[in-house]
Image (cartoon, rainbow, N blue to C red; front, side, top):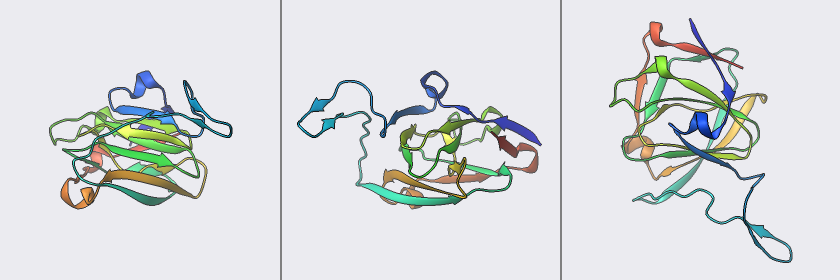
Length: 163
């Protein structure tokens, strides 16, 4: 079975798939008060529908075997790992035909908000250390029902992610 090594998240490597920003270790200019430092507009997104904030809980599998992927044709997805670093696998947009051979896997530090661009292949994030990852998914309301194409990979296209 094909194996993919999860790599550290860098702006250069992740740029074809989206962007990210550390919400727990913010950098750059801030608006400062007596008790606070506010880092405005570090990541933005426009949704034509109401934004929904949905928790996801993902158990750590013994083997990180990837057998399917999904994409959204009209919206980017944002994910914020809350209790652990997470592994996120992504592949380029490909007009609805999966390209699992082009998949990359990234280690996203806890507290880093990741945006996955529209039509990028992905699936649920996976925990790095904890037995269960707690993360926040941000999408337009009901995207899971209205704009989510999930494709099962044939055996020869499945792969394993390694740390």
